[in-house]
Image (cartoon, rainbow, N blue to C red; front, side, top):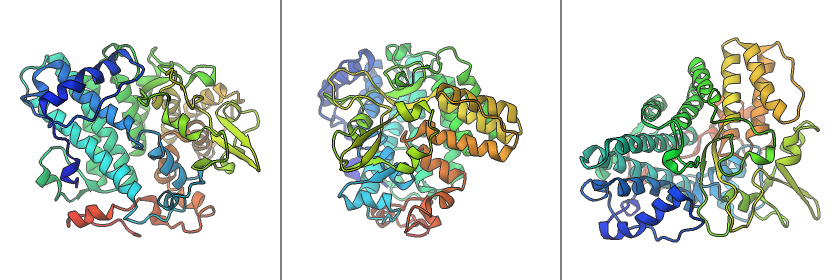
Length: 466
């Protein structure tokens, strides 16, 4: 499943050189850090002898995620880009044929972005999480309260990786340990089994994580109990467990920790009242990688917003005027402008992972699917009101669901795969994308398993259509 040279080998003396930098960065918010990736192996006899080093082992997962250009970093080869291209959010202006395959929905199993920046990278974090969980379980030296919290946080992160993998690839190998020989020959698990582990991890996180953010220095950069509820609300929505999705979303909405800022430009600021979980950028002289990537100062050489998305907004929608920028040269190009900072040594914006508006839209859909059109419409109109739009009056369930999905598109565009996953889970991908994509076929809703993984593991089978 994962090449041996991917597995992190840890030596204690090297590890301790970087522990303090990583720990202080996430706890006290240093503007920048410069550390080399540690060369160490996670073992219960070293890393998990002390609370501080165990803490740093968990923080290392975030550091690696945000220093990358792939997976969930928000950067050029991340899910934000590749799923935005695969769906109908983004237009490709790159000269990179590997990236172009996502835009044309013409992926091949040898695509290197797919292999290295999505598959390998996410499984590397899963391996790291499994190693931490094993270390915590075997250790007798950690403070019980710290051990419990770190276990919940690590299980949240493992669930986060598996959630994206299962939605991108479907049936995949499910590993919960660090035995390389075993992991490298696993058969793919059923989607239901993967979701079962995700649910178990998130329920454990709910029981283990604090209700506030004090353990993260007051910053919303590590998951608490409500982040786990928010994540589980999304998972239950995808599994069509409507009542559970509603209940978990309500748990978050009812918390005084969170509110919808009236000013749309305040939503993506660091530690905004809407933020349930954000990832803290770590790249010197930049804020988020989304801001660096999306904001246009000259003709796009990477991506821009698809004009059809821009045109789908109502004229008075404040998200159209405040979350979408434009650049006119030989023609007019549009770009996501949720993040306002492209370059700055002063860190004012964090990359959003979970936020309150999504919870209202989850509950709106879940309520509608249970026949509570009044409640679903109320939640939908809460989001529309913040966007400066008049309330809708809808009495038909099908029309209300259409309105909710359109609202999700307008509210959550270019935020880590929402649009791609929404088209897939509602079985609307072919209806929406076939008119836009010459090479579209229904099997494109799943990405291909990387060819090298199938070559190394004869128990894996390729997804249909590849």
